[in-house]
Length: 308
Image (cartoon, rainbow, N blue to C red; front, side, top):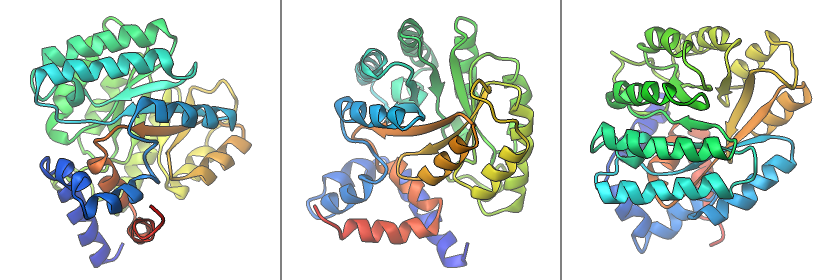
């Protein structure tokens, strides 16, 4: 990544953290229509009803599906409870077998960990009743302790609740062994959040790729998802695995990214999954997707200038 690309990525990640911008930009009369065109590449739509046909299409193509209702940093307790209902609806309306993902700060973690736990338990019960996995998403490092604490409490009651870990964070070397003792899927990502280098590898650092491969090897016997679009990582991991349909691992990519990765891994016989998101709070998500790869910034310009 060039210096200019790295600076652009840094700016995008900084903008993504501005809670005021996440409401103002999409609603702006000039910028709103432009950024919505960009978001269409990565977001299934505003409503659960928009995600349902996309999930069915992905399953028909032979891949598993993970669905997330986007939202983070909710600071209103009543709203956190109301947002929980959307996850409960998703647990009953999504096609059979779809996993359901969520940010704990969407359902109360930024207000009170006990509120988040109460709401998460409701979702865990609903997903257990409908036979689907529930996966807790990663958030910024300032929330990692709280996220893992709530996940630990959920694992005392449920066996189907997974969690996402970021290879970028230095602390993952200590966190992962503890998580391997818990049930539920472990989803391994590089990590897209703006973090100081004192606690996280830069995304372009060779140490990050080394860490990802090291953690991937530790996960190979555990229920896990290798969630990355990095061709080198995907192919290196795949070479070390004996492909089989009942494998505990799977390769996962995000909507709008990596369909060729999924197709190749599926052709080799590995389980595959596509991760789709819906909702109106897509500003942080889209900024982070573009920041991950400088080529996506050029694609965003093309998308913004495209048809309404």
